[in-house]
Image (tube, rainbow over all chains, first blue to last red; front, side, top):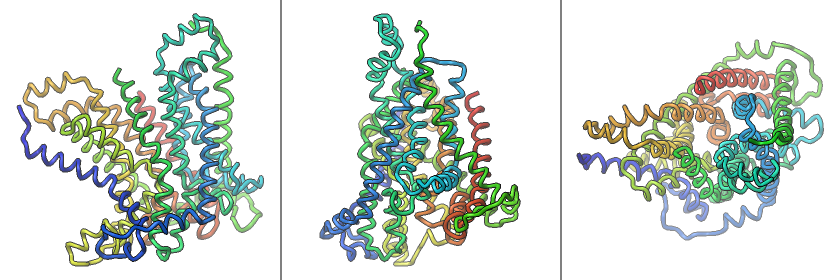
Length: 273
Length: 288
């Protein structure tokens, strides 16, 4: 039986509308970043305008933005690196050497995600103040490591479980030790999923706001904080500049779009098989 | 069989030790602070034990924040699941493989954005005079002003829409992938029985996906707790206290208005206890 045509047509229209709504607000923001203020503050939205790079060059020329960019890059980069070094081996151990605590360990790692960020940020602020590390990058890196280690570990466990056991067994028979099986077999075979997990953890800390807001006052501000401060000066700041800062802030996570959607696909392909 | 190896210990122990320290130190310290009367402005403090908690329950703004948080949780979780299942099923029904991939890519974009960015994008869009989202209203009404973020009745929903924009679309992709993993036979069988399309999904596919869909809802419930960034940028808890969730109120008590760190911490501790108990119970049920 063929489905009724109008229903199908409506369904397609709804989907197309959803697809439009998914990207249009962002596209509009990007367009506004290229507009002069007079072209933004109009009652009827302007689609045709003379583009300007003034907003973008203004943003890239401000010290606060550059410092924020630097802080974000260092804090997120270092935290992700720590997450890789500590999270991947631990995930492999859970995946391949099951013991009776494996379930509890997985639950513990997941439960770190239940902790309300305020509940972590308030005491950490007091602690960092007391040891004199408040408003420094090391404090932020250590705090973010909790996030990256647990997320990478959580996502890497199924990735390592997806590596066919036979390959590893064969390597053992060939005389490989447990560590070289991890290095030379498990890591390379699971690499694609692992890169997805790592990219995800990067996006998570890059986008983090509350903890960075509470743990920095001037020196260690990350880019999201700097961007939000631009608007605290009221709507007097030219909108084009605000829009440009939003675009700058959003670009790095969007660079991982391909990697992450590939990761999603591989997760579900595994489930199917 | 694998030989006995030191690997599990050397790989697991350091990481678990570090995770334990990084999570337990702030958690326990949050409880310690909550039992004291620390303020940001004054260095001295003393132990006041449970008086912060007692004060909370007679604080009407706190009770309001609890209510707002509960509303936020319900609205965002339900709307996300409805949007996700709706769009997921639609993609499954009417889109071919290439179109599916295209939509999946589009639908993942919003969730990748930093919450701060998403909040700004929509804050501009909601602007009563120049916003793109309020433009259709201005066009239809001939220039009447509608400011969703400044009305107590609509502000929470306007912010929730941004949350659903990010998570609902993303989860639609996951629902589609889940549908694709189902074996085709039951669907074929239902079709042979002349079941309508929506009936197939309501009675066959979605019940088959009950467990993963509940897990998905569980994830969303956890993520909905992280509403702070959106609310901080878009409304700051306003108008009045209409969108003041618990984390927003804790933040403004601790850092904006009075610097009462201990009071804020008491709130955070209550939140922590509530969420850890609820989610542990839910998780055990989902796993069972």
